[in-house]
Length: 482
Image (cartoon, rainbow, N blue to C red):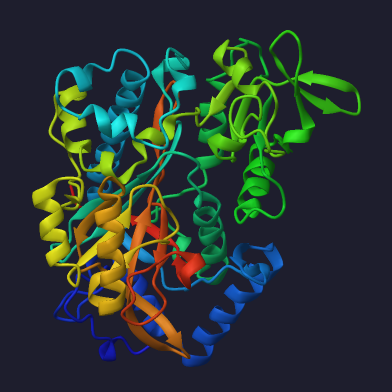
């Protein structure tokens, strides 16, 4: 790889300084990759592709023609972050999830934050993810969002900012783990010392988090992963996590709620009591007795069992009320209110379209801003102003005026870049983000790094795999800095 020809451009580059020198966490990586011949680099790239095929790492894209399984798009050049910087970032992520869980618990009980005028009441009453059925329920430890995937971006100043919180059914952690497994095969020499911190404790921490939610204090609580089935885009992950934790992967039809309001799993030996369900199904499909009557994915009576404290659910129904991108704008105030602390990781500046003045600014600057609907995910329903047409902007102006509560806008960030292989041994900068995963039950834990997603198309800011994005391994590197 000819690093001298690599040009970082006008963005913060994760591996290379503006002068073209390796950043401290990337020094060893860049030196090693530079020592490989062109043929060696190509053989490593091919090895990565073969490993992905062999391990069956795939994701599903929904199209009009049907569901398409695709091999996981992977770039062999890791992204590096110093352990010192990560320690501060991890503290900020823990702070954020603690505050969000206090917020959710408050909303379903006393609503003190609304009475004290910190968050407007209509924000909650008009949220499509507020579940009246959850009012008064007290899950273990007051925790509703046990698994959170928070999306971070680095702006031109090199600092991390929170782009959004994913508190409903966050996905992607299996790809973080598989990225590391692939990289260890492709670049084994670089793992011969302990400078690259490990990520392989996630599944044991996830299992411990789930076990802590068990209503029965038994030696081996029964934990299951509830999946919508093989046609779901994240089915690979559901199967992977169940296998790694050594628990059963079940569908709704495998579970039943009996007259004692407990959940049981159908087995060849008869019914077996289930203590904790890690559900990968959206709220509205969980229980046809309470939510969508036509759902065949959930379990009739499941909400009843959960409300009575007979089964643990992760994430708890109703946690998505804090997943709303409008609520996101209030998170710094939520942290100050519940924890009496200043936010460690800042938000990206956010304009609320429900506010008349802010809406006017957004409508006048659609060509410069990124506009997002409050509750969409996967990069859908967005307007990226600088890459949009006048027709796109007119369509979004209409949507905002019709339903201002449903839209926020943010400045177009100068998203950081990292060197990415675009063709045989050619390196070009590509924009990326980072999704670390935070677990909260009895204890709280943050992954060492997270899932780095890469916008593989030149100049694109959309990193989602469903929209043509790819991925890299994320290295948290001990650099010797105090």
